[in-house]
Length: 401
Image 1: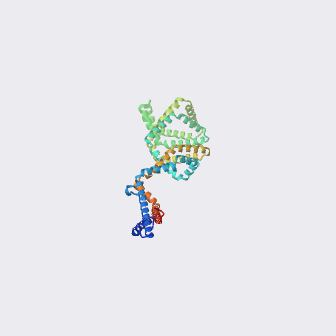
Image 2 (image 1 turned 90 degrees about the horizontal axis):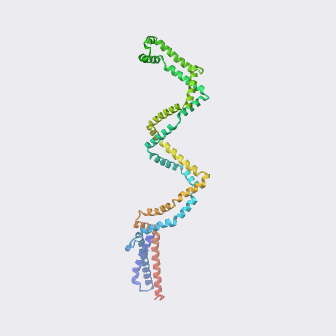
Image 3 (image 1 turned 90 degrees about the vertical axis):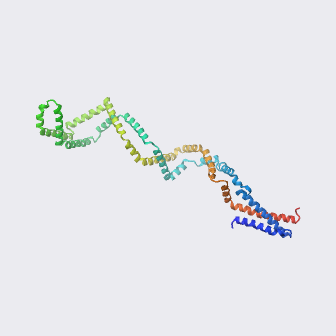
């Protein structure tokens, strides 16, 4: 049997005994004592029932807890904010527990959870970027870099490096063989004939002495084509010979061009202008390529940035030379927000209790102390009965009045 049933049963029993003993209250000590004990117990039990009901319910319009909801909320807020979690207590907690190594240990422990969060943060930042504006910015900066670059100097450096390259002879032979193959494969008899006839057609329209040469050129066409092809093949053969006149001429031309490239300011300016203009034009036409590249590598960029950020934080917190500085920095940053944190903690009480009206709070309070409330009722009934009996005995024995 729970306590409520015990309290109700005890109160009902005392009332019943009081009613049954009432006719015998003047018959003697037993009848009078039983009546006064039951009557006092009933009064005590009813009084305590009314008292506890006044706290949690509304007999006779009392409803004490429900009517004082706002005061109770303020009391709970003050208890949390001014007794349990004061600003001084929060500051003391931060001073004792806010250490770089502890934060680092938590970061390393929760790294698998932190990385996806950082990736999400990076993703939000990347998605917030206007690709059109970013492209314009990159294009403007790219053009600026292209225009400032000394392309002639870079070309000269590359040519000079190639000239002094240890394996340049091998490289030259490979290139010469490629040129020879191109000449032999490209200048077939059919191709030479086409070029021959095309050149003669142009000369025949505007060239000097074209009338005198016409019969010779057309009559000896086959022989002339053979001679031209033979000369081209001879040129192809001479290119692969390091000591040939052609190779020597190419070498001299290479050195001459390299010298002009390093000394001729006008040539340098022309090369820089030409290269810059062509690169800028090429860059302007690559917007779609840039956007596709951006979209296709976005996930990789997110992971890269998240990893870099986490790595930088771990390296900074784990640096023993910066430990004291980091501890002071963290404490300084957190102290700024102690007042805000304290207000939020105290305000959390108000927020937590906001869904409950006075009646709901009274019901919750009653349920939480139900056993204690019924114990009060039981004690009130018993003590009232004992007090009534003692008072009657005192009167009966002549000790009072």
